[in-house]
Image 1: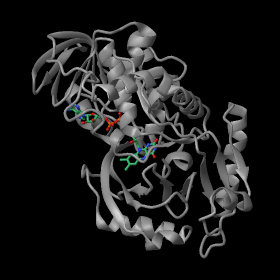
Image 2: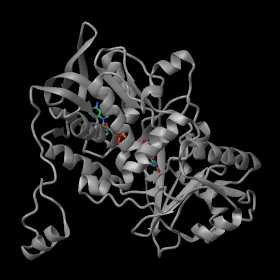
Image 3: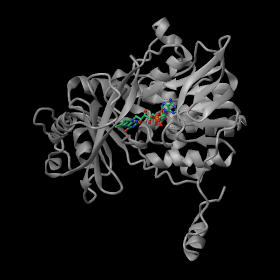
Image 4: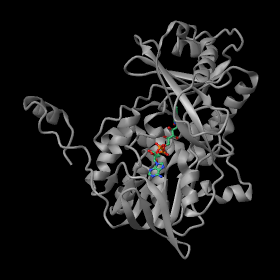
Length: 415
Ligand SMILES: Cc1cc2nc3c(=O)[nH]c(=O)nc-3n(C[C@H](O)[C@H](O)[C@H](O)COP(=O)(O)OP(=O)(O)OC[C@H]3O[C@@H](n4cnc5c(N)ncnc54)[C@H](O)[C@@H]3O)c2cc1C
């Protein structure tokens, strides 16, 4: 793999940028792989990367029906935080956050991780109690967060109107090392590293069937033909229900559209991420100056991967109370992704009823932040056939046993 460095940039500048190699190869599928991963989103690619790096398994194909990172990974609003309430969640999200800290160096690819700080506003007494509780839980979990006063909120984010009118800001849960990263770059960085390890990333190749024999996976049928494998990982977010059906089992997952929008670019005015869960909206400013705005999921299950007018109105109406300046902004574009929601708003990293098929899904509205931790844990599950400590609590059996990891407060609305 060609190393990216300041010297490489200088060298290429001198020769009119004609010497750059392709970042990843575009191979035709082989007949058989040790592991096939369906879905080249962040989670699928990170799974492949850690299979190679941590477990030495490199005869791997990542099969993608569209283009890599073109699902939710390339559509999300990139909030990274680990201030979850339950211990298993805090563990996997904090693992992910800490891997983000060194991701650019690890992948030799600038993913623009920006730990600018994330605050979750408390705008009702219930939220004050809830977030204070989370801050206490986080300190026991070794996750660095604090509950801050309204004055500190205003100091960190001066454009905010903290006095109301309907919901004054009563404080916030603040994670100073939370932030954002460039979503495409995360997918591209992993893809480049996987390709360099000799793995095949096969784009524009849809999995249309899963072949099993005697309760054991044999391979997949795709738009580019039949491909055999010893192990199969399904990592397709909002399409998990459909792909699981191909293997003959059902999942406790609902698929919904989640939308976001950006404004026209403006001068820097906000250098933190703010989430306002009572009014149902959140905002940050991108490096290009656009205000990145999102809200809740659509109120009904659907596979509509696009934006809608009612959503713009709902989300902007919610945020304009706390951020009056956005009333004067023009909207630049809007889009949607299909997110995979579980009942307890926690992910599934699990074995399945079919031997050697593994599933990673249920990240819902908040899986971008989890990509490296999820890939780390999923690779361990696929390589060893059993979950390691990070994935152990997130098995499918928890739904049968009623052993939920309830993150509806931390993840139901937020990202
Ligand atoms: C608008 C929006 C805002 C969000 N904001 C945040 C945020 O701020 N912070 C955060 O942490 N998370 C956020 N999320 C959630 C986050 O984007 C997802 O949880 C995460 O990207 C899921 O990654 P993934 O790799 O599992 O899925 P995806 O990136 O969706 O990848 C799955 C891939 O599987 C492919 N696929 C599906 N079916 C098949 C098939 N049959 N054959 C082959 N390939 C197939 C798809 O094409 C897709 O590329 C947001 C999501 C959306 C939509």
